Length: 294
Image 1 (tube, rainbow, N blue to C red):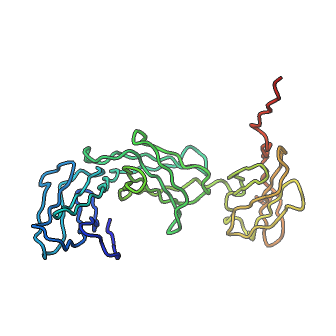
Image 2: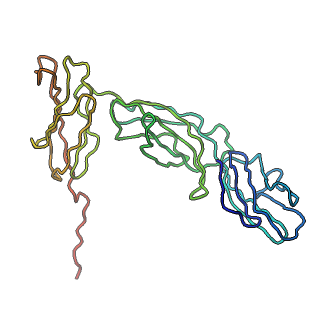
Image 3: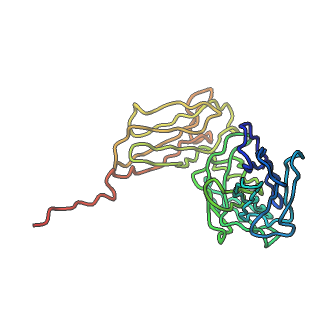
């Protein structure tokens, strides 16, 4: 972790330049009153805990052999001028991440990991993130250091995901996060045209389905819900559809039909329509009515 400080530092003000897993480098503001020398020190004590710099010399100090993930304080003193700043070293990363598709579902991935190889590294949680290819991070969650496995849910079928697990130490401005251990896992591919419900809210349903690329003459998909006004045609690449403004509490039948360059094929030609049935939850599933008491 490297810092770039452009403001003019106050006399003796500690400015961190670089914080790593086992070391820190810092500078401080110049002091112009009469004093003998700059003295810098670190607490809690760790090996060589005090350093001295003469006036006019380069104002840079450092400490090494620190404990990963531990919080320290650095103090610089010059005569009557003094400043103390806190920092935390970066914890060590987990040693490995092992990812596998979970069961037969095309929308979840289970993975596990090992603690850092060096047991002296201090940390209190793991940060879990994931993305697709070089795309943006799709989610972030922190779990206790006592946890060693996790399940990502509501994923896209037949998709390769990058999974990142890092250790995290501290909170707020003093939180530091390690480099992540990584793994790659793919969700299962459903059979051609088979519907997978990705999410359901009080007025929307989002679905995906298995690719039909191997079907002769395949051109696109016809996706339908009970209301004909909600029917649509999805191109051959996109396998995702969201139906909105649905009635809360209603049960819906959703179908996906494979289309070819000769129209809708019949089951005898190995083209078929798959149907899924999904219920929208009521808006007040957990509502509690409180009456007036006399």
